[in-house]
Length: 266
Image (cartoon, rainbow, N blue to C red; front, top):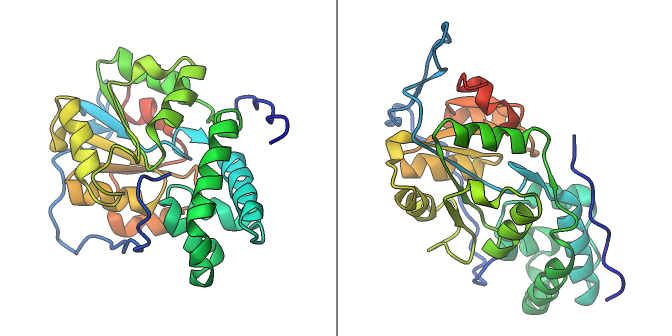
């Protein structure tokens, strides 16, 4: 396979072959909201009243920038399958989407006969390069430590295979900060099915109405809504604040690094 790409400095796959596209729907007007509500910042007060007991994060483009890794893996899998490698700008918006669905978006249904080979090549190459080409987003390590030192329980629910999430966190010395990590191979179904998020909350010994879910896509927003969990949107992925607006997030932040200040923990 050639020499592995070098590990990049810190920056300022699924278990099934389902090809059903997820329908992402904003919540109905007047639908119920979790009990955690945005508040008004006062001296010594939090922007969230009350403070959550737990915070669950998406992974890719929420805590880490894995864009080069995804571009690299899709290019490799495409070449191995006799397909044209997609441009980086086509790959970036698919991060956080189940891999079989990404294949359809990038290559269409005319090449479904190559799906199995594509997925196999992708996963093989990802095992070699994904960790080294993934970088922690600025401010995330400090944020995670601040949240833990404030007594909050932390979890992750990602479409990515759990061992890849853990490999990155272990390499960065952050794995021990999390009490529950669920990857795509642990989920009953892919997000926006809420069961994975609810399972993580159960493992954290928390309740949905005392938990926040932090993510960078409307898939994450829909997942939180279906679970009855307050959602905090971050703009470190391609999704814009306007696209998040119909889901009425508790907050829309530039990055997860702003969470301690938003919660008045900084």
